[in-house]
Image (cartoon, rainbow, N blue to C red):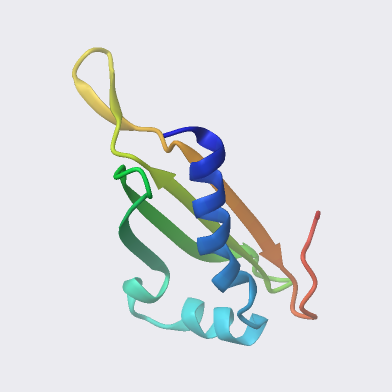
Length: 107
């Protein structure tokens, strides 16, 4: 599968987080449950390629209450470091930072 198609799938997934308010994302961050900070979904692209999307929500600048949402998509390819340590490199990744006033930082 080409990177353009994978990026489009990731952008569509990340759009649901962009629609969340700052207070919704902050509530997830302030939750003591780890699963409120991390979402992992599996999917299948139109050509049959399976993929996993991991999305993390974290404070980018806690004092300013800026929230960063990071998301990456992997088709499952893994490499090896030093020939034996498995490493993970996503096929595509994207992120955004949301300020308390609802604006996106650096866009």
